[in-house]
Structure formats: C-alpha cells, structure tokens
Length: 313
Image (cartoon, rainbow, N blue to C red):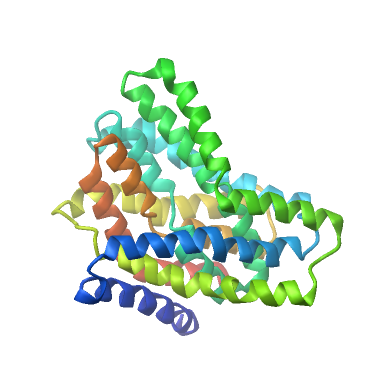
C-alpha cells in the first residue's frame, strides 16, 4: 500500500495544484486555460504516445484486442443497467437516464489513467490502456446521444444523430493516430531514433499537463449541494464497474494478469468532465453530474490506491 501511495501522491498533488491555482487570480480565465491544455493533450501529447507505444511495437495480437472487447462487455453491462434500471430508481428523468449511465461509465482516461497506469505498470500497461481508451468516446458518446434523442421523443432522427456523432468522433486525433499507428505497426518498420526522440517530449508531457488540466477544470465545478444525488453514479463508477471488469477479465475469460490489472484500474478512474458537457447539451442532470465529477475525483483518492493494491497483491 505504501508503494502505491508513493506512486499516487505526486499524481493527486499535481491535480490539486491545478485545482487550487484555478481558484486564484493567476488563472482568471480558468476554463479557457483548461480547454487549451485539453486541446494540447488530445491533439499532440496522446497521439505522440500512441505512436511510441503502438507504431513502434509489434502489431496487437488477438489476445490484446480481446481484453478491449471484454472491458467493453463489462462496461456496457453497467451502462445499460444504469440507463434502464438504476437511473429510474435514482430519480433521473428522461433524457437524463442516458446521461446518468454515461456518467457511470465514462472515465477520466485521457488525463488521469495515463499517469496512473504508467506509474504502476509501465509501458506494457500503457499499451493496453491506449487501446482501451481509443474506443471510449467513439462508442459511448454516439450511443448516449442516440438514447438521449430517443428519450426526448425525437427517435425518428436518432439514427441520423448517431451517424453524425460517430462521424464527428472518428475525426478525433486519438482515433486518427490510433489507425495510423496500427497501420505503421503492421509494416514492421518501427520508428527511427530521431522520430522517437521527437515524439518523446510531448508524449512525456501527457501525464503532468493532463493532471494539471483536470485540477483546473474541477476548480470550476460546483457541488451544488447534490452530493447525495451523485452517490449512485459514484458507486457504479468507482466500485461496480471495476468489480465487474475484474470479474469478467479474470474469472470469466481468464486473461493474463497484467491485462486484468490494467483493465480493472482503468475502470476505477473517476467520471470524466465530458459528462458535464453532454449534460449541459441536453440541459438536464447538470448539477448531479457536476457533483459526481468532483465527488468521484475526491473519493478516488481513497478508492484508487485500494483497488491498485487489491489487483497487484
């Protein structure tokens, strides 16, 4: 446990630094600064990391792709359970039920997972994470939009909405560079030392800049007195999802230990801030979602080290 805390402490410290500086006059335009840093992470840092860890390595095996499929099998079990059963019990109104489910499953992978997985499992773990992460927005966002449109009574346009959302997601730099990295990996050429040295600098910045951006963004999130209403989301995201991922990857499909550990820890990350953007777009559940984002980030200070200790011991 002490070893895990020594790994986690710098990560949460960097996030706390962004949070508290976001409250000062140094970052009067905190949301704008956070957006700029986020854009850098998604368009420069993570694509560089993808090239280093996938393009320069052997093409992913069928087993490596299997862990991605198993991860999303568990994730969508929780998602649809949340969307069609738990959200109603928790008092979520239509179309907020799909957004409730999105908040239960959409983790802060781009900013928090990279430093956590890198610190605990190294490059081999990061490679698995990046493959899991590449399908995160690409699948969750279109399905959530389609369900939300259906709940709003505009189901006739749900398919068109799904197509537009999917096409928009496919333009994401992470998706584009994943494809390019896989293509280059298939050639077996690898990357030259010069190219690797060029990519190493932005790739290395993904973790610290991402954590600072998370803190800066959270400094603008308000709990709004809705901590209790956010508890179901937090329980599903921080406990139920990683538990099911662990069960599926270890007991049901018997995947290699490293992949089980990476998938489980990835599932245990707090709710990502994109959930608030989606909630704002449909003007529902914004207060509950914002409370779950901040609340799950705070709670993960305890739950994340515990889960890491569980999977590696």
